[in-house]
Structures are given as structure tokens and as C-alpha cells.
Length: 144
Image 1 (cartoon, rainbow, N blue to C red):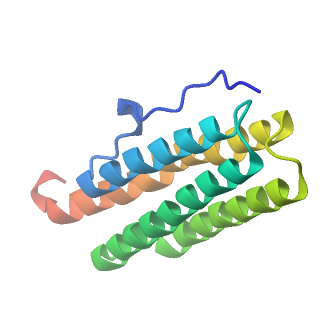
Image 2 (image 1 turned 90 degrees about the vertical axis):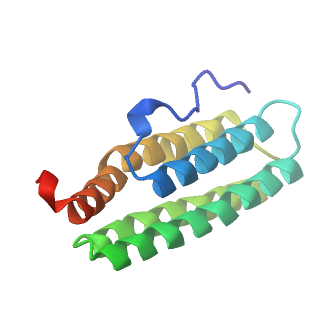
């Protein structure tokens, strides 16, 4: 199984918030490591370990991001939290898939691409960017 898509943090993923952007870079790096662990020749155990590595950082990042939203008074934090919960559910489904299979398959690869990579990139460009813009405007009212 090979992956023909690029999993890198690029400028189109910048939100303008240094903390969020730094954590997104780390999160995307962990996703890339997870995807590589799922490629040919890698074991189910290794894929699960890398999913653990991704899951642990995802939890950390979501808590940090939600605390930032709470602190800034971001009005859509409940909606944003629900999106984070959707992603956590996806991670659990990936665990279940790996536990129920011989290891990562092409179908698994497609699930990861759609439900992790595409989801996260879309989430950053919409939900996270709106949080960063809200915080920026709150901290820089003279620029409104």
C-alpha cells in the first residue's frame, strides 16, 4: 500500500495564531508518521502504536484550543467542540478497524485520507481559522 498524497503543513493552513499553528504543525507531522507506519511492510502493532501517538497529541491539542476559545470568549466554541468530538470518534473507529483486521489495508488508507487528513485540513481552514481571526480581532480592536 502506498500513499500518493502529500501530508505537509503549508501556508494555506496558517491561522495566524502562533500557538494553534505550532500545534497544527506537530499534529500534521504525527499524522504523516502514522500514515507511513501504515504503509507496506509495517505491522499492525506499529500502526496501533503510531495511532496512539497521534491520539495522545490530538487530545492535548483539542484541550489547548478549547481552553483558548474559552479564555477569549469565542461564541461558537460548543459547535467547535462537537467537531473535535467527531474527530475523536473517527480515531476510535480507526482503532477498531485495526484491531479487527490483520493490519492496515488499502481500505484503511482511504479511511485515513478521508476521515483524518482531509477532515483536519478542512477543519483548520474553516473552524480553526475563524477562531484565530476572532482572537486577533478581540486583541486588536483598532484594526476592525
